[in-house]
Figure 1 (cartoon, protein in one colour):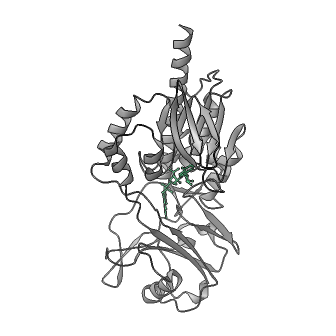
Figure 2 (figure 1 turned 45 degrees about the horizontal axis):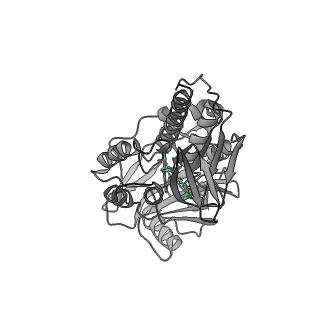
Length: 358
Ligand SMILES: Cc1cc2nc3c(=O)[nH]c(=O)nc-3n(C[C@H](O)[C@H](O)[C@H](O)COP(=O)(O)OP(=O)(O)OC[C@H]3O[C@@H](n4cnc5c(N)ncnc54)[C@H](O)[C@@H]3O)c2cc1C
């Protein structure tokens, strides 16, 4: 679809999943087919999926993602339509290095990511808030779980867990892989089990704040990665150095990633920053975000399974997929996949109306 083209489509489209992929799909659909009836169905009470955050005592806390790769984000339609150029801020503006913790010592990593990383003044959650504000004329059903998607003649019937049904001319499934495996009709058992097998390891992020004078370390880096793959803590971000506007002056804000289920993540982080950074003072506050299903880990067979799914979806016209389960886990990847799905929906609906007119 040409970005400037608008189609006079009066069809109904249901997007299942209100994460960033589903939101990007809904916004692109609305831009291309403003007369279409678009509904977003989200199982939870809030939109945004894995993108969450808070502001506590002037500190901006990202519970999940804390940056987006700049050149990829700039290439999305969302970037222009939400005027993100004037909303984003550059992460790591001082070009600080990243360390690696190896054998108890912090060492500068020889290579660092040298592209542009972007964040938002209010944290990455601001991206979702801006997208939600733009969801004009899109029906949003929160606290609504889709259970089954069924073919009904030329259309689709989306059955909801609360007993209601929504009829649609096209459906975009933008849920995590395991939910998608249950929703996509006629999917082969092999493909469903490949989707269900997409591992999304448990991850916990803990953010803590201290008075800067209580932190003896220079914090002159974006943080460190832990070389020992068996350590419970996998990384620590020096948030107030990486995103200086995220913490008021005089405050040090740090965030740890924990890759195992631990009873007391706060105690674990206090132990970590004590042994590595020499911080013994109690934090001013701590916030914990526990992801029972974190970032998908694609197996070597994942790309082949996604191609097979694409072939299979040819026999289910009007059904499309998007999101981190399929086409990349970074936020810009998820936005791209939502936008591509929306463009495929519009092409499909246009071809259907051309066939009907012939
Ligand atoms: C700790 C962490 C750190 C990360 N850091 C970064 C980072 O720094 N940069 C980056 O680019 N990316 C990062 N990511 C990855 C990125 O945030 C995610 O890949 C992306 O947000 C996923 O978006 P999505 O829309 O595909 O899926 P999700 O956000 O998972 O959204 C799917 C939605 O579908 C809903 N849903 C599920 N089943 C149903 C159903 N049956 N009916 C209705 N709704 C349903 C869910 O409730 C959810 O809201 C991070 C992720 C995590 C967890």
